[in-house]
Amino acid sequence: DGGITQSPKYLFRKEGQNVTLSCEQNLNHDAMYWYRQDPGQGLRLIYYSQIVNDFQKGDIAEGYSVSREKKESFPLTVTSAQKNPTAFYLCASSGIAKNIQYFGAGTRLSVL
Amino acid sequence: DAKTTQPTSMDCAEGRAANLPCNHSTISGNEYVYWYRQIHSQGPQYIIHGLKNNETNEMASLIITEDRKSSTLILPHATLRDTAVYYCIVRVAEGGSQGNLIFGKGTKLSVKP
View 1 (tube, chains in turn red, orange):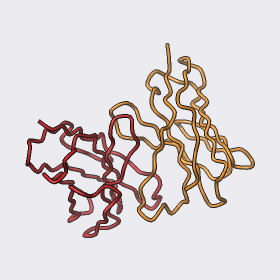
View 2: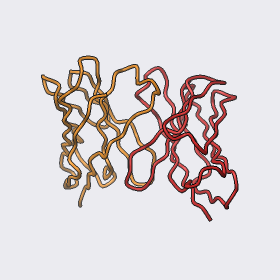
View 3: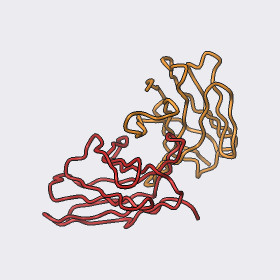
View 4: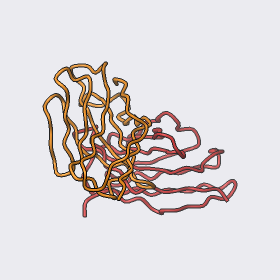
């Protein structure tokens, strides 16, 4: 099936640890996005990439890093510098129609 | 992006039509109306979008008023699986400078048996 795959579904981070969230798409989309959602809140943009080997900071990029070495993949690393990482992380992609974004099932990150 | 206003919550009986309103009185001529929904603990799902004509697809219908200041998303036969938060977003077709969608509070639709 075509779509966005995020893994893992649940992730636990220890103090001082970096963790990486995976996002893969087989929709042949150029643009990919990472959002963070806190309970009862809307989505906030962390990073986005319009094309391979290029990415831009979103509204809340501090404490996060990304890479876009392949069109299909846009992994997000939550670094130890992110002091409040507990949240629901959503990856999305879009093609020519930028406002029609396809989302993964999300990764729920908690701190041990 | 034009601001949108939606009711906080709505109830609907299973099998009946769910009509979700959205007010966007400051919409510009080149802005589209998009609808997404988010079922609990899942990623948002695109439903439908339109500019000025009414639109229908396999999921829903979108009715946009002639002055384009408001719209209604219609789920013709709501099921329990349609229980979700529904978001109305107004945006130019090319997207914003960052490309991200801005989700407001949305309407929490509860479909009851």
